[in-house]
Length: 264
Image 1 (cartoon, rainbow, N blue to C red):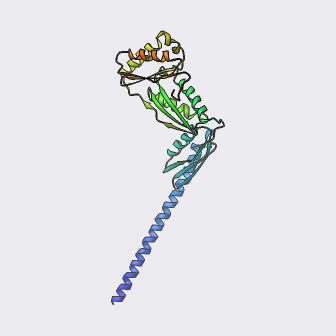
Image 2: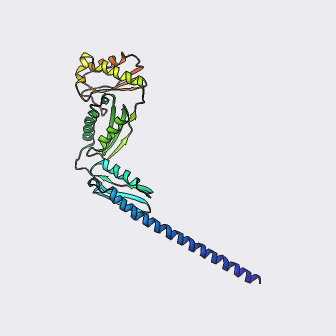
Image 3: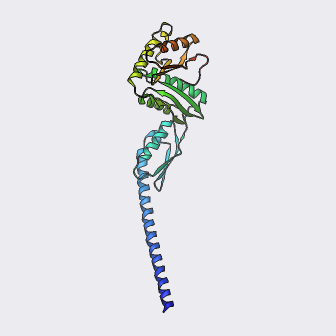
């Protein structure tokens, strides 16, 4: 009797195990089937989202909700935009962005940096804030790292967008800081600008839309950046900034033409 009971118990355990395995396999089958349906829909959504000409070289693939983007685009902004669009598609779990930026424009890192510096110097002209932005630019193998201080979020976003849409840029690292909102700093900015650009020997810089003397103010501390013609102009700008009421400290980082760094 005991042996029969053991056999019966083993048979029941085996049946239960087989039943559980069957249910598990059925559940996994349903899961795989649902994943396949989702993947097919994601692929259709990707085709729609990436249907414009700027994404014509992009090749999207989907596997179990993971999107892999490969192929080529002409501008870094298209690579970033493709990634953003893929992330916003329903049921996408993650996105692997393997897109290469293959611009027809071949520039050395130094050439690319210099061209970007020139473009950024005229960015936001007409908005009255370009004199209060000071950016640094580093380029390595086409990857651009932006630093410095922007007057406001719109100034920072404009700078990043300009670089992202420039031919030859492979990637953009945004390390730009935004100056904090401060009515007192705004007062100091305007006062320093009037004092510096209004000085007779420095007035020649005021007529340049690029505003080559950049004035950064954070919590009452003033930093002068940009490029001037000679040491006398650099010294005069520092003295004029120091004479403004409410200024705690002036850091004179102005460069004299002929000894220009990558800062702009």
